[in-house]
Length: 89
Image (cartoon, rainbow, N blue to C red):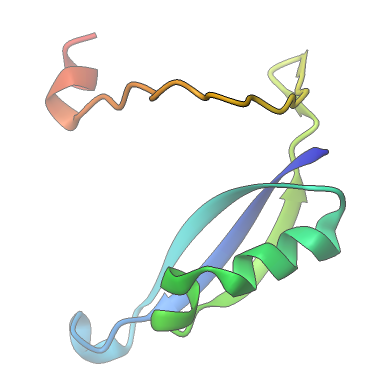
């Protein structure tokens, strides 16, 4: 299993009359880029906002560290730091 960053774009008519393209990154665990693409295409948010895929990157190494994934039966909730929380670090 590999980790992929799928960079997507979309236009939102409620912002700037829909002329600006917005972008989001989805992080997907998949066997290969094709499977990552298939998973993203199935996401409700992707479909609802009529997003398109701008690129897919496999994330094998980050800052000199090898990325490895292992399946977890009972994943723990991850901490999310707000703007103010991260500012205070």
